[in-house]
Length: 80
Image (cartoon, rainbow, N blue to C red):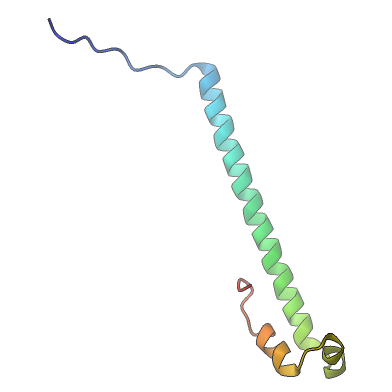
């Protein structure tokens, strides 16, 4: 007698729908994180441009020197 093989289990409609829902939720979460990251980068870019454009008097009020502002303003937007 040979070994009888059992057929592979089939995905039921509810399992298939659940798998599709999990995939869609994972994609939505990834998309949200990507959007959040882009917004952070945009805000860094804007703040650094504003910092470089400040007068020495305004920088002094913040406790920064022109070289501090230049160093921070020279960073790329993705650098924290």
